[in-house]
Image 1 (cartoon, rainbow, N blue to C red):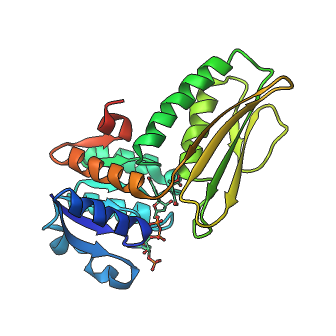
Image 2: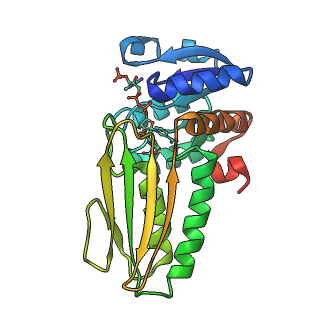
Length: 238
Ligand SMILES: NC(=O)C1=CN([C@@H]2O[C@H](COP(=O)(O)OP(=O)(O)OC[C@H]3O[C@@H](n4cnc5c(N)ncnc54)[C@H](OP(=O)(O)O)[C@@H]3O)[C@@H](O)[C@H]2O)C=CC1
Ligand SMILES: O=C(O)C1=N[C@H](C(=O)O)C[C@H](O)C1
């Protein structure tokens, strides 16, 4: 598989390593300092593009890749206010994309545990649910994309919760998410149900970026030859 890396920071470099180990080829690396090379001609040589840049650039990058007719694996977080526009365009134009707020197998299993736990807790209003996420200090968005996914999964299953907020909250209609920035944390997410009697908590702790990078390469292998929008649930068959 010939891969174009859009974004060659911490994740782009981790993905390159895993992709080479799995026998793939990196045919293009785009970063801020060579953005003029992000052209239709250069992308014509790629089977797939893997996009990990920033909240501010992801939407434009994805739309450009759709225009160039290149299947996309996008991992950038913090831009999902524009996801509906991407979805509409992709469905109309028969584009191909995998999007996941978190590509690691462990977190995607954790998502399933989170959904089941929320279902069980929905009939126990004596527990207050809250969340915490910890990442390195270079992270640009808060809360993390993974925390937003976890929060949406909980809100869909616990009727009294109406929205998440990025602070502690005493409002029973709000799910409070605390964001901490501590180096070198690659990504820790905790969901806590607390009552006067006891606490139940589930935690996922990434020890490094290998899980995210491996999942992104698996998603790239999956998307080749497909049309439409997919998530890691489909990639992993969960
Ligand atoms: N879904 C998942 O599993 C994961 C998602 N992420 C997300 O991926 C994104 C990237 O993370 P990470 O690699 O750690 O961040 P880094 O800041 O280390 O890397 C991002 C790179 O993208 C470059 N960049 C910025 N804008 C553009 C642009 N318009 N075109 C091309 N390149 C650009 C940056 O250049 P410069 O440094 O010069 O600005 C930088 O080298 C973040 O949104 C993060 O939240 C991270 C880990 C896992
Ligand atoms: O920026 C990061 O580093 C990470 N971002 C993703 C997120 O926002 O959830 C995934 C992972 O937690 C690492």
